[in-house]
Length: 126
Image (tube, rainbow, N blue to C red; front, top):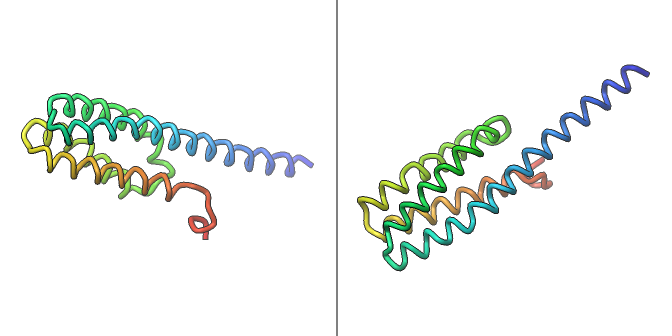
């Protein structure tokens, strides 16, 4: 009977930690989406100083969430998002609005790809 209880406790711990991480992925995606839309709007209106502020806020958001994703997500996806997040403020300060807008689109794609790949769907499990 003790073995059964230990096995159930282990399964519950795994499910609990997986659910928590999935919730963190969801929260990050929901917080990042308005920032990315605002950065895209700033790039379209060529208001790069405001876009730089938003890019720095996104970079801070990413550095807050990224350590909890390292245990469960593929490293290459996390590195691509980190590189894009680090590059955005410099692109806003020194680049043109088209290059900044392209980097924002790449970042949005990477975040969406990460979210879709971590969902417990049959295509991701098998």
